[in-house]
Amino acid sequence: GVDPSSIVKVRLYEDSNSVRYFRRVTGLELRRIGKLRVYFATPRMELVLFKGDDTLGSGLMPENIPVGSVAAGAIGVTNTAKKFAGMLGIRLVASDRFGPTAESFEGTNLVGEVVGNAEALKGLREGQYIYLEAVP
Image 1 (spheres, rainbow, N blue to C red):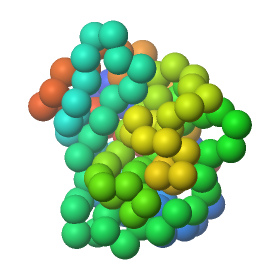
Image 2 (cartoon, one colour; image 1 turned 135 degrees about the vertical axis):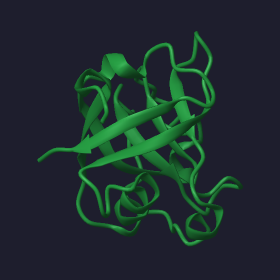
Image 3 (cartoon, one colour; image 1 turned 180 degrees about the horizontal axis):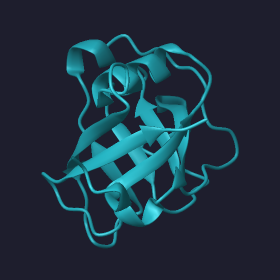
C-alpha cells in the first residue's frame, strides 16, 4: 500500500481528450490511486515535470488553454503546438507567463488542480514517484 500522507489529491476538469490522456498515463483510468514518475525537478523549481506517453501525447490538440495567469497547484499537459507534446506538469507557484509544463500558454492544456496534500510535491527528485487520487 501507499502511505496516505504521500497521496496528492487532485480535481480534474471536464472530460476532454487531455483529461482522458492524464487519467490513462497516471493509471487513474483503471485504479483509485494513480502515479507519476518525476522527470525533472530541482530544489528551487517553480514546477515539477513528469514524462508522459509520446505516442498518446502526439494527438493532444490545444484545449482549455490558460488565460491571464496559472495558479499554484495547476496541472497541465503540453499540447501539439509544442515539441514535447504529452509532457505533464504541476505548478508550485503562480505564473502569468508559463503553464504547468513550463510552456507558453498556447502550448498548455489545463487538466486539473491540486486540492489536497500539495506538501507531498516539495523536495521531489528525478526518478521518485508521486501518487494521485482524483476527488470530486
